[in-house]
Every structure is written in structure tokens, then in C-alpha cells.
Length: 148
Image (cartoon, rainbow, N blue to C red; front, top):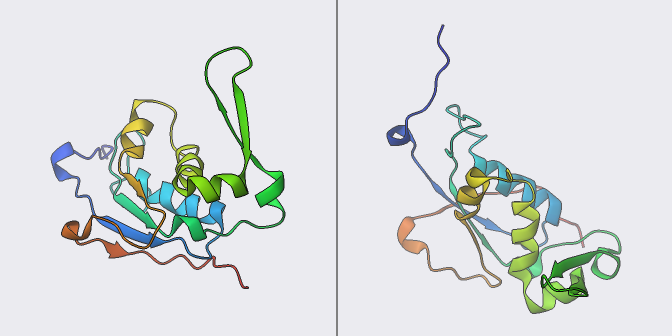
């Protein structure tokens, strides 16, 4: 039996909306990365981009377990000597909550052209509103909510 390889014309892309309110960051990132790669589809092929579009809303309300708000850090470098900057996860959530989710999800995608193409299908918004209503996105439920 020959191995099935999907053709680019056969790939159908759905739109999913994930509400990040009270969802643990890592659990949310793994679910979103799975949807972006297309591993939930029977036509999944590791050498092709068969994934769906993912819209994440309420990024500012994502849950962090333990003391990660103060003890975990987000690093970036300007490219110049001594240009390393670090911020705690709590500081990043206050200033740019989208960055924290984008970095966590992109870290779970392939590190090549394919991964960069997949990451372009990720849309993250800090608040509850998004401009993708015309695409008729379907809500995607994650059951890893934190009890308060």
C-alpha cells in the first residue's frame, strides 16, 4: 500500500477561537500548537502545513501556576554586547500579554520554514474582541482550567 501524502488543494483550513481565561499557559500552548500543525486531522503529514487557524482571546487572563509570575523570566537580546533584557512573566503579562502566548506556542512548532508558516496562522489578542468574525471561527474548548 502506498503512503498517502495530501495535496495542497485538498487541505481545508478551519478557524478556531480559544478563550484563554483561567487556562494554564502550557496546556493552552500545546493545544494551540496541535491545531496549528494539523495533528488532529487524519490527513496530517509532518512535511506539510495542513493545520488550522487559531485565534486566542483574553490572553491577559491566562493562568500561571506556582510562582511563575515572579520567578520565571522572558529573555530578549538586542544583538549588541550587553543587550540581554529580562522581564518576569508577570511584567510581560501586564505590558504585552500576546508575546507570552506567542513565544510559548512558537516554541512548540518546528524551527524551520514550515514552523514559520504555521506561526503566521496564530492570532493572539489581549482582550475578548477579535477582527476575525467574517471567517466564522468555531469555539475550541480546553478543559484544563484552574480552580480559583
